[in-house]
Image (cartoon, rainbow, N blue to C red):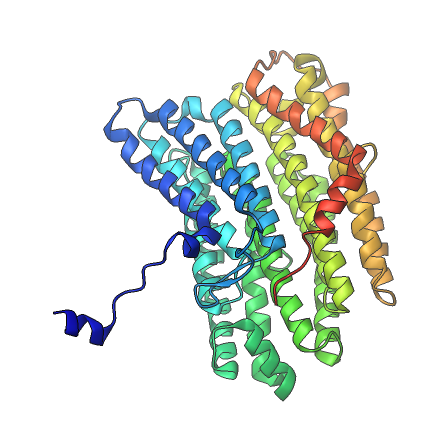
Length: 506
């Protein structure tokens, strides 16, 4: 028996040292298993599952912070399928912190009306999507890219339609599935072409082959198809049409989660791939320049479409959906400079991490206020926010802070993050100045629909609507507003942390 096993080889079982790089992911998996077990020990799993999920995500965040980029952590693991570097660790911490905020928001809004039996299922789906979005940011392996994106996508499809008695939720989930399946099919087709060109699953080797032998028609099609799959997760034009419908039909916490987590994970994945492509080409040549221009044009169109389409929206969730599309466009403009030089790549990585950290609190605060109003027995239209300044002053002030930050006005973190983003884009020189102009013009355009929300809250009559009493949601929204203020005051510290964590592993 021993001889037979020695011939065929024993299965590889990694020890603790081998598992340390994915310790936060393992904690999330353990938390998912706990969600499945808890209902067997109680007939009222709401409190137990919420507490266990918060503790699990908190422990995963702690393990990411403590282990982080420690000795032996940086580099490729599991035969190149997982890459641990500083940007991936920072994103993982941001994602887990944001997930904690979404859980608190969910507990203060939707949890009360959700049936007991649905709570474990909802949390399993949310944590599963979090796991996939964590893995998306730390791989350049084609197979792992597909697995991570699908692991993030499948739970998201179900979450979008989780309000089982709502027709709009089912309609949103169906649209999400159809768009997602189409985008995945196109992406996988492109990955098959890239695999055929490079003969390997590692994108860095494929990038070197494309640089050495020329991109050619097949290489161009493969890269474009891969870009379609990632652009879908970012909700970039023209694969953005699912976003407003899904945000409107899904519950408020799911809309908030998708607005940040999905986009952030896809942007980090894009950042990694285009950095590897630029590195293989030496940040020079026709291929990198053409790709940079294409990404820049896509970003300019995306932010313009997002801002202009938001003008006529009466539903606050659809308005914030188009706002998130516009914000994605700004960050895509930043991606355009990544392939111009290694210094530009490092600066762009730092600026992206800063922008995502501010964007996290902007959207969490805005969606929390909208969720508190909806949980008060009202709807999610702009009219439902009428008189909120008198009915719930803390919520109204927090919403104002979040919207001012989304515009990019001082004295909030959105101002510093957007100025820093525009500075990095401008350093690309030449045609990159046109992108700076587009961002500036779109910032002015966005003033109208953001200020429209503020006008409704403070200058329109409540028309008999009652006070919004939700202490947990008020505290969470206020915390987001305070953190946005503190991040501007301490922007130097934030930038130093981002600069020290801006090296993509090659």
